[in-house]
Image 1 (spheres, rainbow, N blue to C red):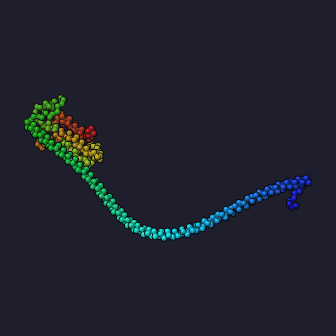
Image 2: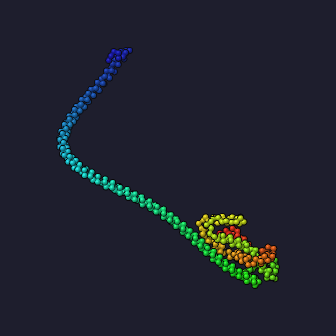
Length: 354
């Protein structure tokens, strides 16, 4: 210890105490160092033994490795010889395989070209098939339209035949009625079988008594009544004939200025029926309805045509016996029925009932 490091003591007791402590502390250190020395000597001896053993083992392994190395060198020489032989054989195989590969490549190129040609032919066939399908579709559409047109024409022909038969029947009835009317006119006998029986008022009884007094006046009054009301019947016949025509050719009907206000709703009904797919059935229903209801109406129109041609003078005389334009008898009922049929609302209602 240096003098500078020496502590300063106030008394001797402190100095003694200090040196005792330092001596005790140094003694402990010496003991520890001796123990460590002993342990180190023991460990070093053990280490020397282990090192000797490891050295012996290393010598032994070195000898083994040398022998193994010699054996491996011999094996290496044999393997080299085998490798050279295999390389020679593999080179031959590689050359053979390369030749086969070149042949396979040529075959592949030829097959690719053949496949390309087949694909092109397939595309051409598909294109021709699509064209054929389109042409078949067009032909089918034309065929369907032709079938529909033929069906419509057949329907029109059937309607025409029915109308022709109805016209022929009406002509026959008109001829019979004209013959009966001529016979009654020359004989002066009224046709009481065709008069509708009903309860008559006193005014009508007086009129009938006046007619019974003179056959000529009775005939003239009857002709006058027929001529007075056959105008409405002829209008109804024209109206029914126009309705009986097929409505699918022209959906809009042409009315005169006087008929337009009364038939505006009926034209809308016909336009609506044309736009539907079942216009054939509605036209047929109209024709059947007209056939059932036009018999009595057409009688007046036929009577007017023949009667006016043969008896123009008698019509002027018959106008004097009009009884002030009053409507009597079954003619009044017929006129009311005709007026109901002429209205489009009642005609539509009758069709809806069916």
